[in-house]
Length: 229
Image (cartoon, rainbow, N blue to C red; front, side):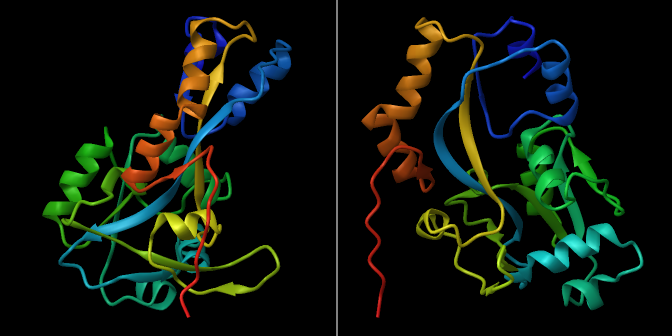
């Protein structure tokens, strides 16, 4: 995002919005960017290696666990093992979304194991049964070494939403607590190469079909959901 704001990049593809300091700089220098082009939706997930039996947690329990250091994993998360949460570096969009959704833009009261890249997080989770990776579903989709944890949660009305199998159809229905949008951010409104690149990602049928077939939710599509009896 820094490259976009200082004019060194014409387009940035990003899975987060502007951070608080970036937003403050934009207001201070009266920087106004056009609305970004959404081209896909993903979700922030917690995942373990396949040998870990835990497959379900509650989002509120996770949020309270990170906010209150006095809680134990057994009492708060309802698990009988000590989790080690692993996440990419603080400059990553994963960390930004974790901070926004789980920490409510605050600070964690728990120690996180911070690694440089999402690949290093995945490699660590594979080798450590008690490790819980924090990342995007798109980073582990189809990888049978991992078990994405289903999350129950309470929606904005206070209604409890039961845990759902992690699948693009439930992302479309917004039946998951931590939905992430991938967007193309443009430096200017000029119809230049960057503009056509953004429209290509956000509107081109072949790109949107690839995103759907990969297992994520395309940003520009018509969805027909057929509920089973």
